[in-house]
Figure (cartoon, rainbow, N blue to C red):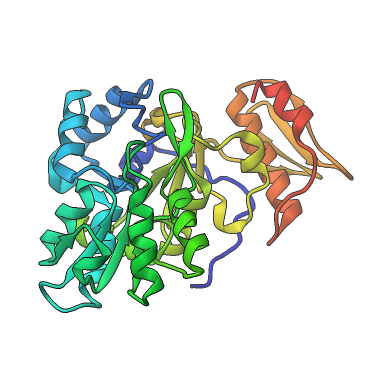
Length: 342
């Protein structure tokens, strides 16, 4: 799909919750971290929903079932039904079901979310490479997943059994910090076999297709914290995106983002759904947002003025992305970000 290269975050005169009919929200790092709600998430989502915005929760984490995710969100104070949750387990199960006979055996390396999704598609989950599976599916199994499960996957994949992965996120945020994600586990099997899996999760098209099929969204807004999954997935699907800075992405990564990783909007947290977004205006050699003006100099990004830190970050994004064009900005933005406290 041909895409226009974004050179600055966009502005919005009205609240994003009014401009878009459906928010496609990532969970880890956006709504919660380590099981606890992220600050401002519960009240912001409640206000957006009360105003008529449909909230759908789209996660690459294949461990838990939609029922379990919905129950957790409801406990946090965000009333949610299982139909409002879309997981990479569902996306990869559909992908497998389109490739193998009905009722086929599938070797599962992961958690209950994968097993439920496969059964939903009429497939039979099995636990061993000796059970004659016609496919291997790998998804996040949590920190207690036994090492021997990777061996079972390797045995089957080495025999030529088709290999599918729910997602390849290398990390996952938690209450104690950043932990290895399913992508790290996929690398274990890849190293052992030399094979490549077919991947369903964000940022790839199967996940976007699953999300649109299940939500019926007409004007969706992807909301996420990761450039390489949430924002790139929105780019691949041709829809707008909001990056929130409550997860894994920091200011330096955002400034260096190549075109497919540049969000439509940038905000601190989910309160960004409820507000307009300020315009970034080109002025002379620089870009102004609020009280800040950012410029791309010979070897660094410079920032002048004062005001809200996020406005300064938006101005810096415009200077960096314009200088980078279709590439990644290599200019030093450290001093400017430090001035913003970012």
